[in-house]
Every structure is written in structure tokens, then in C-alpha cells.
Length: 339
Image 1 (spheres, rainbow, N blue to C red):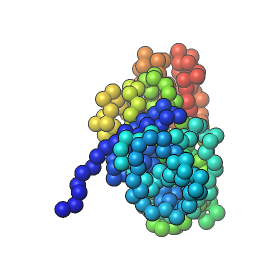
Image 2 (cartoon, helix red, strand yellow):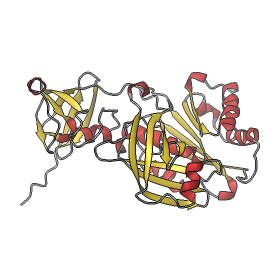
Image 3 (cartoon, rainbow, N blue to C red):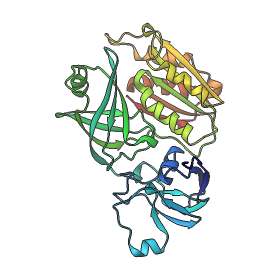
Image 4 (tube, helix red, strand yellow):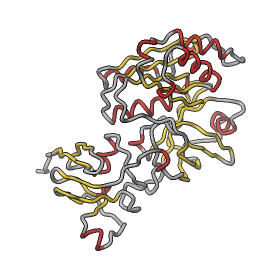
């Protein structure tokens, strides 16, 4: 009869003073990424050698073959590939984690369309899949450039970094966006090749902060906010989370309203407040008015003691930012990204 045990071991990162749990059936890389750790890797299948770590104490078990060859000196020093080895006991490791966005090189990857979901005539959710030999290394909240047959646009990632091989984007049907036009005119289909360059941007979590976190998204600004929130979940950050999602009132609810509500089952201290705004997609709107509608729905007592992450169109972002700073928010706690 097959051995159905699934023992859990503790992985201690000596240099980084971090630890996480990992099953004996999972690679140490998988366990670390699942817990939100920014580990260096590219292929996750033993080809590139980017995920090398040093075993300081404990036992590991090789669970995958790898083509990358470690030198004799590396083996003598206890170095191994995290993507191909699982813990066989509690272990202590030495490795380099990604420190900040500057530590991540710009990558060029040929991806393929895995799935396109049209939420309505104006919004599509597209999933791209990278090759197993070259997954995207990025930090939650960052964005990339996507190119299809010469049409290039920049979009934020809606994915958590723990899923570097499957990437999600939320794309609005904008006439001036040639990439979006190709998507909505059905020129782009499942298995179409999309070239990716990135990651870019500095809209990332303050992972060491103990303050409450407030996230404010306008419409499809939900994409990078989702990436940040789900990364915070994977890190098991205990900070209270308040999420405000502003959207056009004639659309009844935000487009992934149930997904935002589902986070309540994951976090004990999570509050979700949708904000219906007077807004007409077919005309030029008063961004001052939209910013004021969002501002009037906020709880300033919570805002002013929190780190605030804001993703909205540039004009709305500027006006709302001014209102927040004028009413007590510390400028160093405002992290903003335009869409």
C-alpha cells in the first residue's frame, strides 16, 4: 500500500531570520513561494540553477531530476537546488532573497494565451502562461509590457508572485490601446503568442510594516491591489486590511465583487467596502468629483494610522491624494500607482 503520509517540516533561513513550513512532498522552492518569500528562481524544474541554496543543518530528499550540474565544490559546501529537493527533516538554509525591485532583472519572455474571459463588452481577463523553463520573477503590485503582433501596452499583474508561470491581467477595451483592440476584436486567441517584458514599477508592499493596510482601487485598478492583498495573505501578515473598491454605479457591483468578498474567509481582520460612483464610461468625467466621492466614503480615523495603497487613473489619484494629505495622512505612508 502506498505511503500516504505527508509530514510537515520547518525551514529556517538563517541569514534572513525567516522560517516557513514545507511538506515532505513539496520542493523547498514551492513551499517558500507559497509563503510569499521572494526567492530567486527562473525555471522551477532544475534547468537554470538560479534557486541554489546552502544546507546548513538537517536533511533533504531529491524529488526531481535536474539537468543543471552543481560543481564538486558546491556539493562539498552543501549547496543544492531548492526546486528539486524537499525537506526530510527540519532544516536550516542559507540563501539570498530578493531585497527590492532593483534586485529583479528585466526579463523578456515569450508567453502563450491560456484563457480569455470577457466579463462584458468593455473588460476582459486574460491568463498568460510562461514556459516551464522561464517563469516570470516579479514582486506583487508590479506591471509588465505585453506585445502582440507589434501592438504593445503596459498592464499591472493581477497575480501573486507565488504563481510566476501563470499570469493574469485585467484589460479594459480602450480605443487608443492597440493591444486591447486586438484582444476585443478576437484577433488574439487561446495559444496566441504574447511577448512580455518586465517587471517594472515600484508599487509594492511594505512587508516589514506593522501598521494597518488600506487598499483603494478604482475599477480595474483592482488588478495590482489583488496581487498585493493576496501576497500579504501568503506572507501571513497580521496587519488589519481595509479594502475600498470604487466603481461606476450603473454597473451594480464591481466586476469581481465575490472575489473581494471571499477574502473575508482568509483574514480575520478584513473589511471590504465597495463605493458606487457617478461615472459614465462613454463621456469625459469630472475627476475631481470622482475623487471626492471616493474620499467621502473613507474612514479617516483608519486611513490616518495606516499604510495606504492607491491605484486609480492619474487625475483621480492626484486629487484624491491631495484630499488625503490635507486631512492628516502622512505622505510617507501613501503608496500610489496610476492606471
